[in-house]
Image 1 (cartoon, helix red, strand yellow):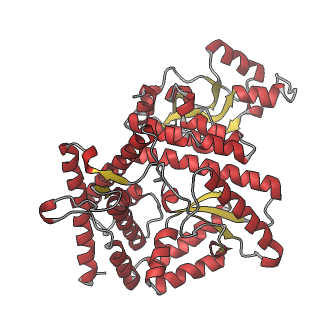
Image 2 (image 1 turned 90 degrees about the vertical axis):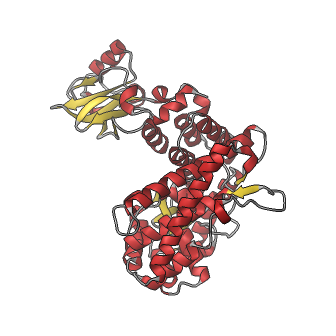
Image 3 (image 1 turned 135 degrees about the vertical axis):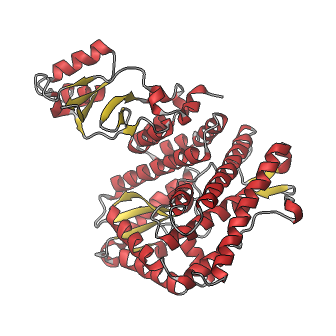
Length: 477
């Protein structure tokens, strides 16, 4: 077990090794460089009237001063990053990892309210570059060819192994593994635009499914779509976006994020449409909730922007939530659809395993455990107008509404964490054996203690499913 990855659950406050190194923004660049040398640090924070106003790093000195021949007597504020991203001292270290990973940054000020506590860097969070999410993301963003990205993608499985061995939560593991998918996607978009030129109109590249929810694991396919500005003209813009989306989707496939078997990808014409067409899609699915519409709603209600114009997605989701709240017939159909995935419990709480085939004696953790919780959380979100995609976060927010009791939401979150972590550990074990990761857990892998907890988790899910089913059948919605 690697000590460094155990720090993912440690409060950032505990990682601060020294008081903050600060300087006035009016001080010279020379003074900043001298202070960094004296203190042996790679960054310092600019403070004015006790407030953090900027950040200067050694790379700023190289790239913005030396490389450009800048006068070192100029104010250090001229080369600083203004209003830098920060993290709260009480937050778990994983949040700093995630911030560095998503934004490809290496110095993050730690704050307690308006007070500066200190600075964290990747070396504070990990000692092994090869398995550090921050360094891995940095390497992804450095790649200028698809072959380079494919090579880097081989490290994702090893990253999940290390997260599992370090005991990282399923919540943090899902966010970190998904951040890697996001990085591959963004870099492929950059490579596509380098070849094709800039997009002719605004667009939003949007993740769906588990990527949108920040719940990915080592085994995953891709679900994505493209929302285009309503100025889209097929004759003028169609060829560009068709080529662009195929480049990105094929690139993801090459990196191990296989093409969606249901073709729910931006490279499919149906899922590469102007914003108004998307609005029409959702309106039809909500007003005509047939099985196909319910399936598509399950995929495309879970959306998150990866790259492009945020307003295209934000306005769409806002309008969607206004339509679903109080839509009794639609919600009743969504509940009915959600109850099709039932936990594998028999009489007296006995665990029911698959009887035949290559997975005999196993339980499908994804479809029999994780998906039912995801479905419940989605219904709560649709009914309550909750604009969050992550299942854990949806449940936390739903507990503050009338959609589910606070105790029920708490129990579901715990059950979801247990089931998701069980799957991550199972897949990590398969990877260590040189096997392809899957979702089928053989009960022989579990101790009696773990089996007991598995039964409890399934029982929680089953109970909350029954409560939701009865609520809608009674006509209270």
